[in-house]
Amino acid sequence: MVLPWSVQATLQGGQLHTLALNLKVKLVPNDKGNNESAPDFRVQAASYDIGAAWKKISEAGREYLSVTIDDLSFPGGLPARY
Image 1 (cartoon, rainbow, N blue to C red):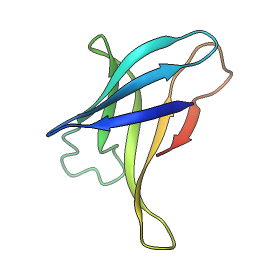
Image 2 (cartoon, rainbow, N blue to C red):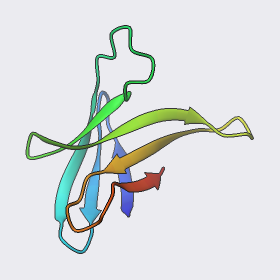
Image 3 (cartoon, rainbow, N blue to C red):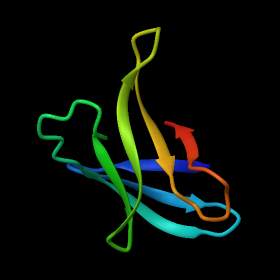
Image 4 (cartoon, rainbow, N blue to C red):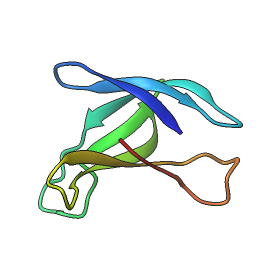
């Protein structure tokens, strides 16, 4: 689970705690090019990509980020919403 994220001018960062990880992470804007399904952000820890985040809009019209973290202690990606 990713809690909390702090917002800065061009990036967002926070702390990631899982069974195997305890990292400072940041969201780096991703140049999507012409690929609409590409993530809006790359999730990085120590300059390594460890996941991705997509901008979404809820049914109530509120913006949020859908984040997936690749943690080898889980059989699949670790999904989170912020």
